[in-house]
Amino acid sequence: MKADVLAKDVYRVSAKIGTRDLFEGIWPIPNGVMLNAYVVKGKEKTALMDLVKDWDGACDAVEEQMKGIGLSVSDIDVLVLNHMEPDHTGSLASFVKKNPKVEIYCTDKAVALVKGFYGVTSNIHVVKDGETLDLGGKTLQFFLTPNIHWPETMMTYEEEDQILFSCDAFGAYGRYDHCFHDELDEKERALLETETERYYSNIVAAFSAFVLKGIKKLVAAGIGIKTVAPSHGVVWRNGEAMEVVTTFQRLATYLDGPREKEITLVWSSMYGNTQALIETIEKAVASEGVKLHVIQVPQTHVSFVIEKVWRSSAIIVGMPTYQYKMFPPMYDVLDELDRSRVSGRKIMRFGSFGWSGGAQKQFDEFVATMKLDCVGNVEYQGYPTDADKEKAFAMAKDLAKAVKNG
Image (cartoon, rainbow, N blue to C red; front, top):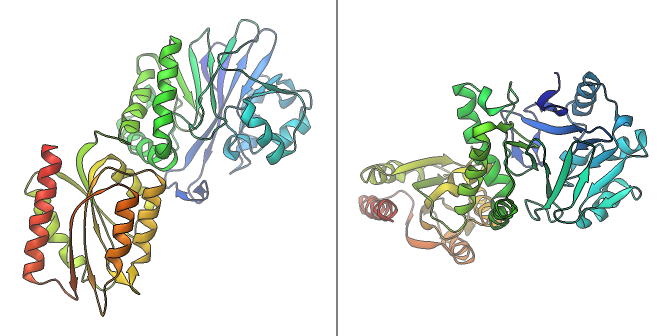
């Protein structure tokens, strides 16, 4: 790979990460992920925006691309750390060992992490909100954007070319053969759309209030943004640059609503008795013309559940009782949804039990904690009767009607 040119003397140096590992040790990446760092060459100083971790040869890939534009690690004068998560900083200790004179620019809250993660304590410059750094013909401006998605996070703006280095904000899962969004073909754009929503719901959703604050800060600063350069995914430029900002703004509003007029049905079944109501519920929702996402767990990773639930106005949960409690895979799903700050949606539940119930009690605790609006439940011993099916159909139909008219 060669370094990608964003503007004169501004480059992306990146690595394509494979599919076998989990992002953050949790989230599957069946389409891989990009690790993006950026170089800004001034007449007096050269800055590197973020690092990569030694993952699938990422460090070697980035250094090889730097070599292609006439740079080595020792040529970097300023290292900007927008965010301290190890996928952006994992090679910091080795970088500083190769270049002990490099000056590190980061937020006050990042200093302890620079020391705690990597033992680096010298040549650290703490930036103030709005502070600028003149590299010689290239000016960097720093905007503190805490909790997008760690407390120490900031974004860096290059004034002359109006490039926003946004770190985890405005990013996506997936590997792409082109640097820029406008270069993607239809298939790649479709992949990017879904992988942006899954990335957001998995990584950023819990911090949606801070996403909206961060966007508001950028707007208030009055800066023109011609290019958005995130740490994952593709670079957005020209007339498309603000599209990804608008997308993140829309996704952030799902925290408190409004959301899409869709329903996510997530279900699990031990012996087919809970599964026996799936077709009935699908028909009920379809009768109102409402889009329904149907996901089975644990066969499908919770990452994909969160993606669909985050955009949906309502949730239908199907799961049996297991040893007097909720079926464990579904408990894990609801726990992850709670962590992701999923709230305010309508919800219904159905499921079978054997010798005793118990799942409903735990389910009700999640409903209360997550501030969900439960429209009811259909719980039955063994296999559902015709009466159970009729009740489930009516309940799901009413739920779909409420979503459609909401």
